[in-house]
Image (cartoon, rainbow, N blue to C red; front, side, top):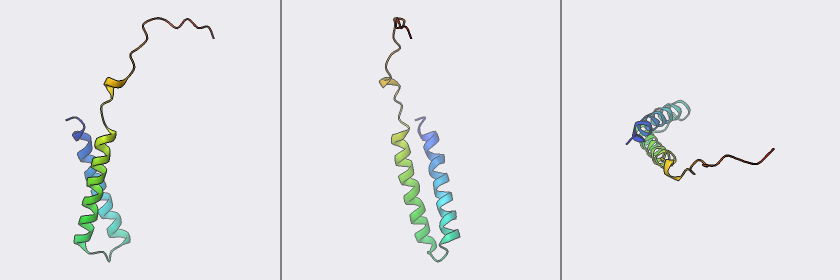
Length: 72
């Protein structure tokens, strides 16, 4: 559930920036098409960030118990 507190702002930022860039550079694109493009981009970024922000704490190797005896 902690991942969603970071995923939702990422999706909002991507939607806002994509609408701004499309409106700035491609003004001839109709508004409904801009909304579809922005929604698709924000959904894709949300899915990608969901998988990249996984909690991998269980897969980290444990700390070695004995001291390192090698001399450098």
